[in-house]
Image (cartoon, rainbow, N blue to C red; front, side, top):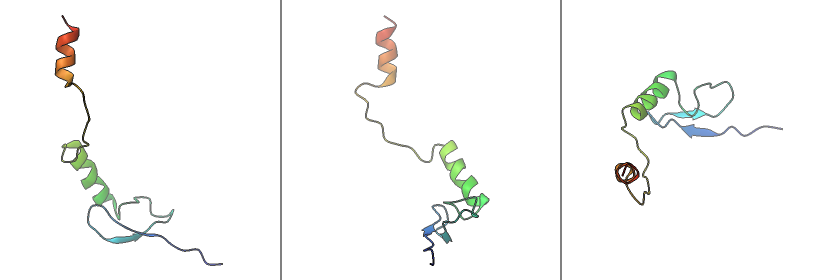
Length: 65
């Protein structure tokens, strides 16, 4: 019985890599790509949209009154 190996694309460099337990950096191909991605989150190059009814600054102003 042969197991099918899943191939994924490194989100940083686009290299094809096998999704296997011995790849400790998955879904990245290397520690370098992993750290580049972490740096992008830390520098806020990536962000997630927020659905706010009221901005946080307005909530602080109204609760302080």
